[in-house]
Image (cartoon, rainbow, N blue to C red; front, side, top):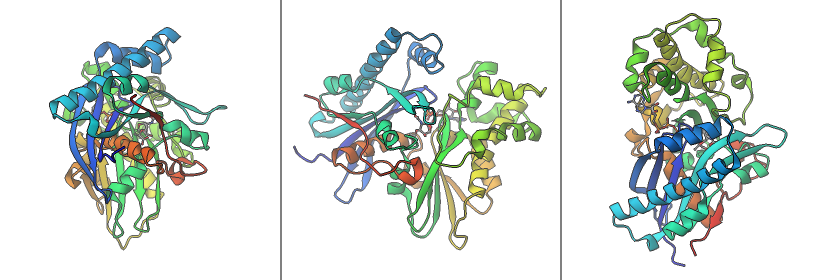
Length: 373
Ligand SMILES: Nc1ncnc2c1ncn2[C@@H]1O[C@H](COP(=O)(O)OP(=O)(O)OP(=O)(O)O)[C@@H](O)[C@H]1O
Ligand SMILES: CC(=O)N[C@H]1[C@@H]2OC[C@@H](O2)[C@@H](O)[C@@H]1O[C@H](C)C(=O)O
């Protein structure tokens, strides 16, 4: 089999708002170039179905099975649309890495599990391309959290021997990777990203999100509420740790809001600081080599929230705060690129997880291979 240098990554995340796809090229020195990328909105009915499944509201096995197959078709169509649009010969693609859609993540129960759906057999059959999926459970089988998995890719892209680099993904949930100059790496889920901001906006403004944080800017941060939000036990748990909408959701927020009588816009303003301070509190616990510069590189949709970026700059006056786009890697596609890279790692039997991040007992190649034929 010719060693193709082209790989596709597919990611639909916690926000359930779209499917990101990235086509990347490797050269012999592992250099990674983004050839093409796009984001396809999640059809409204499918988003509603997924939301019902994620919040386990009377979902039948029939609905779960059909949604798994439907997602497989949608992912396959996303790949075929990108290949047609860019006139790419599918025979030149080494593999597709499909994260799938997380419907439940329970890394610390009696029987830890994480569940991503989107039938990879359908993707392989409909695209004619070897497809790799089910990336998280191998890490979990070796005692890890199964998340976050992007740190190894962040290390590949951004590590520097002369800087302290923190790569922060602000998706529905936020996770960061700490890249120390001595090549040590750590990372974990820091807490909510856009999820509560979006849910609160949807509930009060009936809009998908608070565009440019205009609504949050009209409110005032309430320090008492912020302190109460930060008093969640997740923030006091040691790493390795990961979370999701299973914990940080509107029910959790409404319980936290009970003792308060605040305007919705003051709550939105406070939620912005909640996303920011829950990260900076973690950075304060870490010891960086202060003789070297510190850089915070932000990706994910939250990097496009001007108030979040402003508040990081205010909270970290001695740091360089930038988006990964400013470092040549589009904020929208870092995660999809990561799953293309994880597919490359799997096909070459190279490790995908970092035990220091997930808590797994060893580094292993992640994902199950679904051949096209
Ligand atoms: N101009 C903007 N102003 C404020 N927020 C923005 C802006 N652009 C994007 N966002 C935020 O990014 C989100 C969309 O980003 P994206 O589709 O990457 O999802 P995500 O939040 O990264 O989540 P996930 O990847 O976990 O599904 C929006 O819902 C919003 O919260
Ligand atoms: C179970 C799951 O899907 N977790 C996601 C979620 O979204 C952000 C954060 O929580 C991260 O831990 C993870 O995704 C990214 C891609 C990761 O595994 O690195």
